[in-house]
Amino acid sequence: MPTSDMAVGDQPYCAADAEIRLTLKQDFNESPVPGDGHAATELWASDQMGTWTLVAPRADDTSCIIASGIGYDTARDVNVYYQTAGLR
Image 1 (cartoon, rainbow, N blue to C red):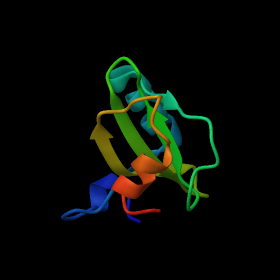
Image 2 (image 1 turned 90 degrees about the vertical axis):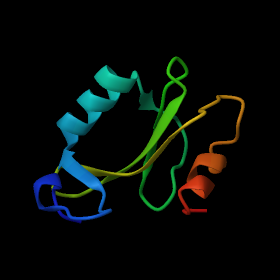
Image 3 (image 1 turned 180 degrees about the vertical axis):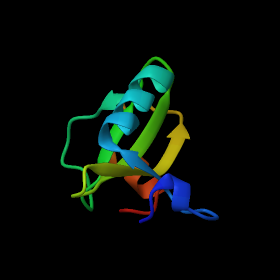
């Protein structure tokens, strides 16, 4: 996947790991959700904001946001968010 400055159309947003983490924490109050993940992804979510984001870390110290949404609820099975993104 390309970095954000090279992306076109509907390609995922990619940036340095630290930038992705900082943005998710500061802008959305999201943090990693414990679990196994799927297809080498991480689920980040916020109880306060009700948002969720699927992040795909890469070996080059960058990550890509591959899906996001609203309606996060800790009572839901995390697989719901992966299914919404088409990963399960």
